[in-house]
Length: 485
Image (cartoon, rainbow, N blue to C red; front, side, top):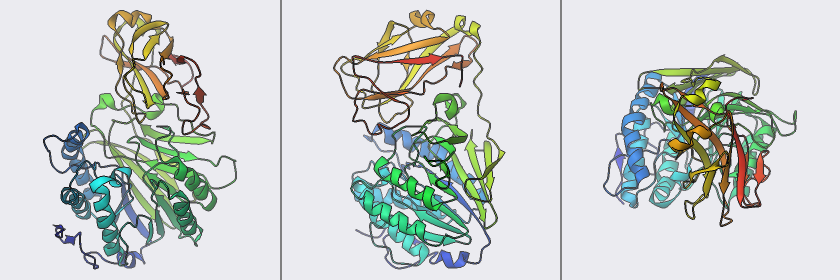
């Protein structure tokens, strides 16, 4: 295959070129300032016959991601760390995939030297084969060291900070990857240490949505050896949380920072994650700083690190020019101070008279392996209101519209049941009622914190709020407009 060149970067070359040996140029730096970007799912051109997801991501690439990369450039970071899923990965031709991945390298390298963690969309098909060649060679040129094709785990040093980049989606190689991670963590630490991967260690806002066989062990190692933060993506929600060890006091808390450039500037789809989901895990203590449900405002992090302290800024964009920001600071890992909280679009607090002003209503349910056929009847307060749509990946869409005749069924406390006539294996959760009032305002019910599984073999059976359903009905899910959030 002929070399694919983008500017000064020959992405098929094996020699060291361009910004080779950046570690040496940063060695004497007392302070480094870097950007952390999450999922791009970049699609560089519109193509007839492309999957719906690719067409959607092309529009996002054009209308959201490219404008926000200009904002990243304006901050002049020393370098960029990307947490994976740089492309959607839908292309069947290696030549096309090479052009698309090369375009991403060029876009980011024009801003600053960029390091990539491997995402699941970077790991399969033509994109996976091209990524396995291009990205390790790119890292080798940056760092001035040989990297074999297929090298996804590596470390680098920037002034006072060490970076450990992992490969979280490593099916069949979990033990090997954990051994590599432990070896990297067990070495004498730099004043600051950051771990980077694609999948979250703690998928609290989108349960199960990671590679649990690796991430569970990785979390135990990071608790044991310590790190300033773990940066990740994958779930497309924005979330910053601090997780204590399962056994309190046995290790260092982990600050998990999830971000995604995939999003929308639509304030109507921007919902605080804590308002839409109960943030529960395996029973560990969780400190929630801020978060957004998937499909809301896109965001990214800017981090300033010295031996004395770390300042993390999360920027969330309501337009290509306007943003809100959250800021954290710490001197030692786990001892985090809040300097500023982002301001999200508000949803008005429920008032009892709202039930008489409902114009439209929807039921939001999230799930895994939920098929639309055979139909699964949904009951609201004992009355059938429709059938469950197909649901996958615990995504917050599609919604089930509540028929106009059924609006009178709504109460302050509501119960939802789902019929499973064929005894299929699936999981449901994230239940919430959304009311649109006659004045255009929206009111949300409190989310039910439980997850409902019809299969005891589901992937995370020790989830603290997982409920197994052994009969024809799944639920009842309790969706109340008053009570404890």
